[in-house]
Length: 267
Image 1 (cartoon, rainbow, N blue to C red):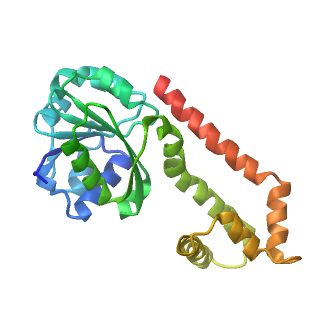
Image 2 (cartoon, rainbow, N blue to C red):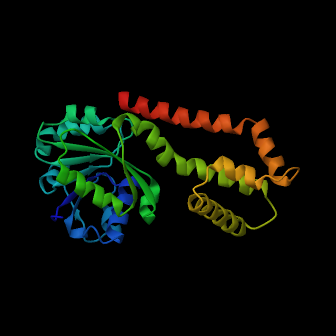
């Protein structure tokens, strides 16, 4: 793979997580990273002393081959209008929820190649899931560069654009939903163990359960039935979840998050 220079616009949670992961993995040398972030330049420089902090977004574009746009979806269209002429013959990677590759292509010059990426926060520990959706104008070489780059941070899945919103909920909102469930289980055992002990047990239970499901190629519903002995404690708890409609509430939460992702794109 040919060497390239990466530009980063924005240094929020996700932008930082991506860069931290790539540098930790040794894929990206700090000297080949050009960052423009109006509010977080001292933080970026403190985290990675070797990065190049640009005075403005124009300088960042000029010095980069591939540009990672890690800004909020509400402001991305105005950013692309400002940078339109500076993105000629560049590759842009957008992580903005809801803004489709088709819309991105419409906002830039024809020579600007576009790929949309949805990562989750676990990329920082190289255990993330990264969804890729490419525009028609992204050539094979640059698709390969992006795929290899993000593969350093976790599982890369190339999907159709029309699945991107629901996919971003599963892998992007999913960690928060899982953490919410873990916290609820901790509250259920309140006062019995220290938080440290509770989390240690729950984390290992969750990772062990996932490993068990994967190793046995098992449907989660089959595992529920296997664990639920008749008249046992587990079936009592599962029945309580069913009586309270927890499954429907989770389905509703997923669909509400998807609707919001679509709404952000329209904004």
